[in-house]
Each structure stands twice: as structure tokens, then as C-alpha cells.
Amino acid sequence: MFKPQISIQKLNVFYRERHVLKDITVDIPEKQITAIIGPSGCGKTTLLKSLNRLTDLVDGIKVSGNVVVDGVNIFGNGTDVMEIRKKMGLIAQTPNPLPMSIYDNIAYGPRIHGVKDEKKLNQIVEHCLQAASLWNEVKERLNEPASKLSVGQQQRLCLARALAVQPECLLCDEPTSALDPVSAQHIETQLLALKKDYTIVFVTHVLRQARRLADYVIFLYLGELIEHGPAETVFTQPSNPRTRAYIEGMFG
Image (tube, rainbow, N blue to C red; front, side):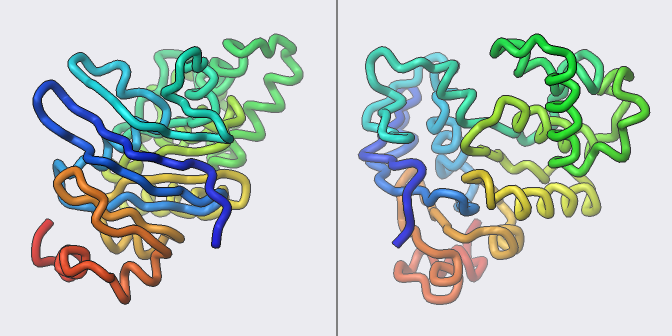
């Protein structure tokens, strides 16, 4: 048994007339890496974005059910959405550095949340860039625009920026899909190192990547939760024939 960090209970998501997620109930383990897998259009990204209410930003979305984090239903009345998003950091598929310096990209979040002391901000920036394995590459040019970084460096910068507000969870939406193999390996290595301190949930289309990284797997198909469990069990002894067919490449 594992300790759940996130408990999803009868989650349904409708986009206008389309039923995108159908009665999803699953617990996500604390301080492990959970991979959400399944063919294109099955609801993987919608499930991920439901975990910090980024679905709120989409016109025509209707959500029912609960997502419980630290005992609090994030869809409950009076929930502080900004606090939820601080707790549940998101790393997007395509790097999206802010149009400012490398330093200010990292310091931006802490400043919003009240950190004004320059010495403290310097410590946060260095610590987060170290955690993202980027410090040694940028420490002499922190005041340069983040846009001057390579795409792979920009994605690691986005990882550092997410860490700067001290989240509990990292939500990663295909974080390596836009990267070259070396940059992708950097991100994978950092995620494996970070799981000792963070609960990590990531969406991937690449089964090889899910096998490399995941401790736990959630398999979605046409908006339904087909199977979930420890990665080794799901990949070697799936209980549902649709899971086996997907893993064996019969559809995707």
C-alpha cells in the first residue's frame, strides 16, 4: 500500500457536449512518479490539468467530482485556486519562459508570493537552477534574456521556475516531446532525482519513457480509466486486454 498525495473521486469533465473524462477514480501516490498513458485524445492532458484547475481557463468546460489534495477538495466552494496552483506546479509540453531575464524567471513566483529580500531571492534562484541541473551553464549570465537559452535549457529553466514556489507536486505535460535526445535525458534525470522530495505526475505518449521513469501507471482510453497500478505490474502483467493491446502496439 502507498500513501496517496492526490485522491481523484468520480471526476467527470465535459467540453461542451463531449464527455472527455468519465467517472475517473484513482489515488496518486506520494513522492513517486506516476505516468498517465493512453492514445491521443483519450483525456490525458485534461486529467493532468484538472489536478490544478487549469481546466477553469477553458471556455465550455464543466467539471464534477472531487480532486482531494492534502485532505482538501480543490473543486470545493471557497478553494483558493492560486494556492492550489502554487502547490501543483505545471511544466508544459513546449518551454514557455517569461519574456525577462533568466534570474527574473525564477524570482518571479517567489516575488508574487511575498519574498522581497534580495539575499533570499538569490538563494532561491541558485538552489532551483541547481535542482534543474542548469546552474553551471547560466550562472555567469543570469541577467541575459531567457529567450537566448536553447530549447532544452529553456525547459530546464521552466522546471526551475516551477520549483521556486515550493510546490508539493510537479505536473508534467509531455515535458520532453519538444526536446532533442540529450536535453530530454537531462529532464528525465532531474525528474528521477526530484521524486524523493516531490510527487510527480507526467503525461507521455512514449511507452519507453514511461517504463524508464514511472513507479505507478494510469492508463486511459476514450476518457475512461482502464487500468492503474504499479508500473512493473501494468507493463508486465496487465489485467485488462485493452491495456495489453496498447502496450504491445496494437493501437496508439
